[in-house]
Length: 232
Image (cartoon, rainbow, N blue to C red):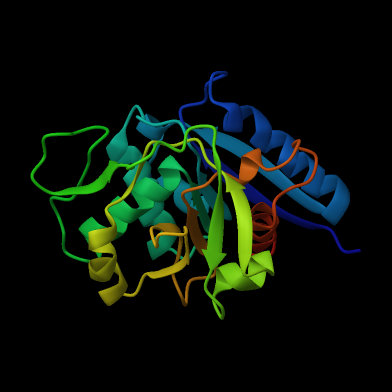
């Protein structure tokens, strides 16, 4: 098997208290052993995000909100989207990907996150009706999407650790400007967003890095890592 290499930026304020921060390096190492994806991994704190991210082959915005810098997290998403760099956002990464798209593409320049600014007039990211911290839940995948291609199923059970998500009433605004919501929960709330035409752009409210016992990378992680390793 041919070996592929790439540089991945893990954008997050690394903490031993965030379970995914401990899981992700091991999962990427497993992909190196199993799939010959030789990935150099660099941690980038949200308050240190700058134009140097353009030099990476993949950008993963990890959980761990509230971030030290909301602006830095959003800038990381913008850099990946505009520069065609494979992007994965999980949990808070999904939330901030929605903020970036709303502000910079859909024209909702004042869109805010209730976790950071609960009294704002335009709340795009709001408390979930039921907290999903530590829960598993079903996800329905839309046929014909990249998510469907990656997951290979119409329905899956995924693990969450979040209390905030996209206000579902705002989905139409983002869809009108090209974003695709390719998976939902049983009541229709969005769980995966993707951007057609981008080399790889996927954001999940669930945390694929917490799937299983940490020895077998989730298909979403494998697909992201492969996209990053074969970017050049």
